[in-house]
Length: 220
Ligand code: G6P
Ligand code: MG
Image 1 (tube, rainbow, N blue to C red):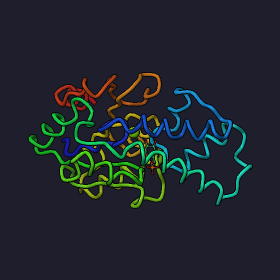
Image 2 (cartoon, rainbow, N blue to C red; image 1 turned 180 degrees about the vertical axis):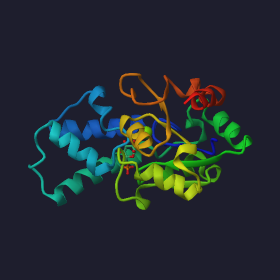
Image 3 (cartoon, helix red, strand yellow; image 1 turned 45 degrees about the vertical axis):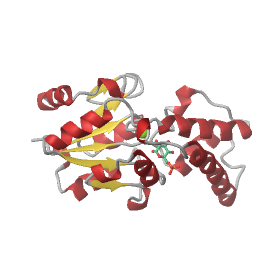
């Protein structure tokens, strides 16, 4: 039986996925590598350095920079991102998320967060949600980012539950892969085409409903 829910942060709990996109897009343009929202789907859920590598590869520029230069580029993107999230507050929690968290806790399920962002704790703090989660697994705890299953497996371990008793919620293709390879049930928030591997997909967080998720989970 179901025991826990593990949430992604950026793009699920709050719309920081948009800020990551804006900051990467600005850096890309500076490097002469403009990219589309469609390409950005490949960056969602992916760690800072892996995202940079994907952008450089898109522009066939992966060999143009030393590691130190790449780190400087990643830092530049992060400084931009940090400016964009400076004013986020509990008002920025996406619609439906607060109610879903409340329902999950009322029903006695455990609650975890799995985000590869080094800014995850800051964002959770600004949203006033840090205390709501039993555990938070971020970049500091893991060796391999999404799509590797390590982060969701680590979350299950820390929650002391079996992966098969967990539901993961993600807005990123890399995140859905991570959930599925961890042996969990995957809820996708976003488009059918980018999240095809999810077990159930909602177009927005507003549509998320514990009752519907449970129905789909029990059918599996
Ligand atoms: C999340 C986001 C990604 C971001 C990654 C690293 O997974 O979905 O877009 O690149 O975190 O974030 P960071 O804050 O460490 O640069
Ligand atoms: Mg995300």
